[in-house]
Image (cartoon, rainbow over all chains, first blue to last red; front, side, top):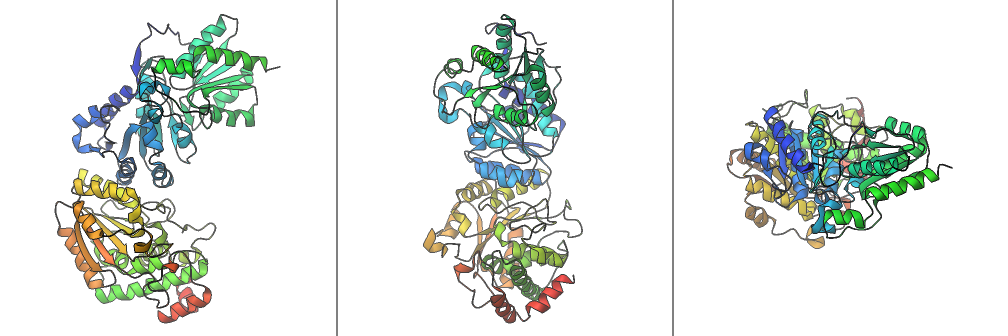
Length: 321
Length: 287
């Protein structure tokens, strides 16, 4: 079981930094890793790689469509091609390239979308990626991963580099609590059990994993034992862990920093309704755009806090009948 | 090395056969694009049968040049040429666009040998080619990237992102060919949304520009060979062509962009090309 400490004293690091650090390691190990960015080298932390391997790095300027398909072309001649920019632009701006060239061709292109979610903060709605998981999840051949912390970002970066085919990696701008460790196991497509419990299953991804762990503490104080699952890969989805959670807990709450429509919760629901229907509640952004503000304040305003998850859990448990 | 190394006369004969293939497969499919495939035929034939280093015996040969059709809809020409090269049997052409065929309406690289990229959404091929050329250069390889573009797709903004990158990166191992047939689905390109002055545009993006008659095989060969010698910049061959080239009642008419000939029109077209549907479909089916 993961022991969580309070919001103030828990160590916090950025997932985008984990990505940058692991990319540098991969670059040192493998000659065929190439990296592209669109004028945000520093913001997405590919500067470590770029400084050490300038010949395997292309700054494409502010032209995401071109960047995506340069990555496609590089993959066609044997490269593992990462392109990294803000999640909004890495997906929506070049969606047709991702769909028709990358995914239809099942190309070895790795998309790193930073600044995912409300924790992006003051830049506001234009820069807070809240739809990109849905846009990526709907595409055949695509793998979609949302690391919950620095260490998971490192492992996910390595894992997607080793998995042939298109992958999307969601990264965040803000420092977020470190809830895993350097040696914690990680496998693409397999959710991680973070806390045992059989009264309700809290299924979370990204920064919401920490909120779900705090929610489980709140519920434990009320005598409710919540299972917490870190669903870092939403495609391919871990059907086994979800069906087991539904059958053993009888109620599910999903929590994500993304639109409820088409997000991780929707992906979970697609599995649950077919294989083990149980009451479900969804924590996420409810069909609206983000706004400027401090990231933490935004999580509170949008109802993406431990208390919101705990309340949703009470509701789901009540619906068990 | 090109595996065929055809001379001018052989290339012209092969181009005529490919036009026969195109009409025959379109009549059989009852669906598909006619005008564009006939306008690219001469330079695309020259590329595969004289210029490019490729290997029909081993389509993923690491020493090959890379040919991307950014205009995915010219599959009738693309597929005919690949089949004539020996990438797959000629009889497959008679399955074009049918359920279960590997010859999809627009190319699927995972299904068809010799197709290097899945295209069909316009304006994407040049960026792919920039990536391919960059990858070859990173590896210090002499391979070249070729990209076949249409004039209508020059209206896509992504083409210019790619043009900017190729010029800035000085990709002299990249050669694009622009099929300037002045026709797109809705009408003549210069009436829908003019792309002119196209030569000046590419020059200002730091490209070497060669203008040719896209149906003159001697000019085509010379242009491709010149492009191989240019250093420090990519080359674009602006090939002035005629939509529907080779069939009198199709030539220059944009309405042939996205429709196939009826069986009667096919008979007339094949007669002009010196054969009949029966004779040519039999040739395809028996190979």
